Amino acid sequence: MAGFLDRAKEQAQQALNQGKQKIDDVQEKRAGDALLKKLGAAYYAERRGTGSSQDTQQALQALESHIATHGDGFLHAT
Image (cartoon, rainbow, N blue to C red; front, side, top):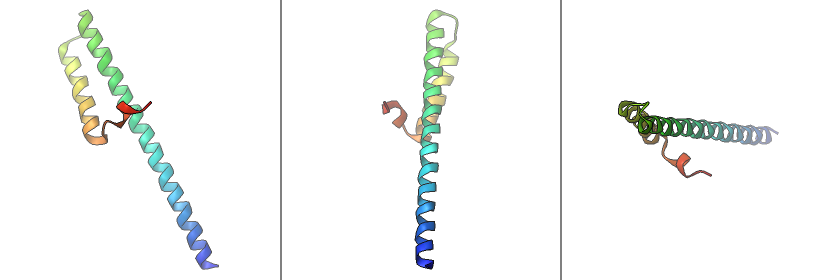
């Protein structure tokens, strides 16, 4: 009986860890998407003359920092 409960507990813990990882992945993708959108908006504003190259550069650096930390998988996700 103890063996059964130990296996059940282990399986539950694995499922919990997988769920947490999936949540982390989704949050990282959302953050990357937001940074990419911010970069696009900064670039567009710069091209229209209402933004600065400094804003575009800051947005690019934030995106590159995110990619360095979390990878660029969000760029390839559909």
